[in-house]
Image (cartoon, rainbow, N blue to C red; front, side, top):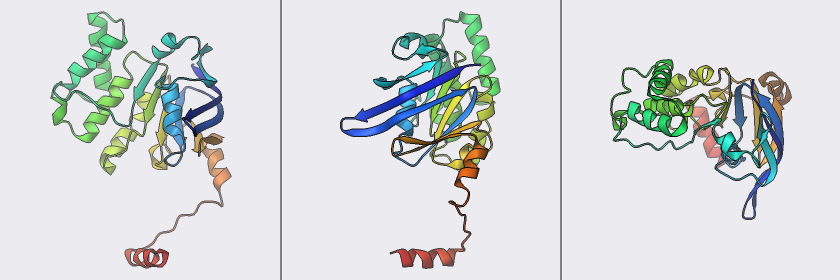
Length: 246
């Protein structure tokens, strides 16, 4: 079982404070990172993914500090950015093969076996040998999941993985979360609660750069009870409400 510890982590973009003394520790499972746009979710994920340098505070994986063992850390990470850009002239298999060559030390037989297992786990057999430019949004996102898991990383970071997908594609992607988080730590940032409500083991909630909640989903529900309401309106009621708010 892996453990990641974040201690008093702060980060500034020039004069803008994006994170403020964030502290938590988590072990294997799906970790939901919630917050409105600008809350600091992407900054936190970029720091964990080593895309930003840790300066104020620290992060460690199984005792290895980001400030002292960055090369070792990077070999234990998988990352799916919000905007997953790929070479669309390649087939899905070709892309995974290139990335496996870069990210691992597997010999040819080991690499083939590893990629076949990933392709099977994500049910990509029917289109993996087609050009990526022919993929739907959901297919491309599955490919993004697949590349993030290459090399069997201890920690995977996924930044808004369902943004831009239609409801059917979003449900397909959500169903892959248990596969991704089996035996590893997986961070999923989102502002869509439904993305993680059925799968997450632990929640982190950010607001304006500060961590305002850390704990189980059940404890979160208890804390917000009485502060959140759901109202069902018909289309005419919505029009009336919009006019009143103008």
